[in-house]
Amino acid sequence: MLKLYDLLFNGFKSSINECVIAKIPIDGKTILAKNRDRSYKAKIEIIHELVDGIEIVYLHDKLTDWSEGMNEYGIGIINASLSVEFDEKEGDLAKQNLDKGKAPKVSHDGLKIRTALSKKKLSDALRSLVTFKGKDKHDVGVKGETIIADTKHAFIIEMTSKHLPVIKKIKKDDTLVRTNHGIEYPNTGYTSGIKRKSSISRMKLAQKYLKQVKQVKDVLPALSKQYTKDPFMNPYRRKNKFNMETTSQIMYDLNDLYFTLRWDIDHSEFKGVDIRLPDGYRPKIKIEIEETD
Image (cartoon, rainbow, N blue to C red; front, side, top):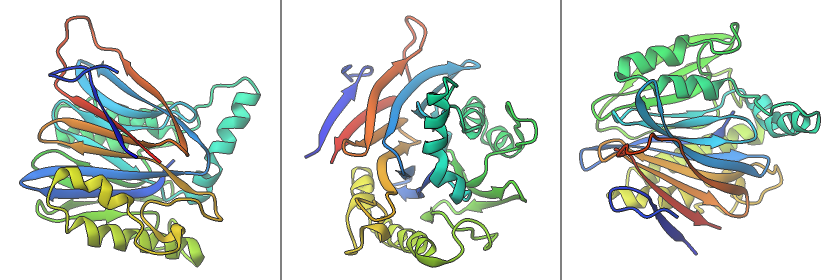
């Protein structure tokens, strides 16, 4: 059963990532969407704030500090990991930090993405994604497969700690999907075995069915259907022997400035929307929250 909660303004009432990421053109709009898979029960929230005077909305993983979202200028960022071994251990590392009384901030890329979202121009945001160092001066740029877009242009960036960034423009009318194996660098991410098979299957299925989507409201349902009997091979991964399951979905409508979160009540805990906007500020970005099981 699906419940929809409209939040707050403009007629709304209050109330590292193994995944599938996609850029989809629908009726002249640019849509970014993602299924986020975790090996732990993610504790997530939505933060709505101003960073350097720029309004941004982003998903925030309270356990790892992972963040990704969009800003008032229609710039959106989504990411899929190629550091798959670390990705699978990320939750355990964060929990170990908590047990030792340390802050559970194991993802430097969260800060990097928030910083990129504080830019007005797509070119500046893209440059920030590949050059910003953050707290770790040796950890430059956001690693993995990253899609960054605004209403006019979209780019795919592939980079790792051992590989320089490859940046390619995505055609406006193209649907593009990435998962957890390298395209420009084939020896990155999952390179063999059942997990590579899953990564390829998830990419191909998402690509096939997202191309058939005609309305924005059908994007996340298309990414949540079970197209094969093996749950590990589907874009939306439910219970499987590897315990890597989809915990949430996010979608950005970059033209109409809508941020949608769809969280899985069995595999994540939604901690609400943290609104940090100044008193009297009228937001430009609208937020929709859905829950599913």
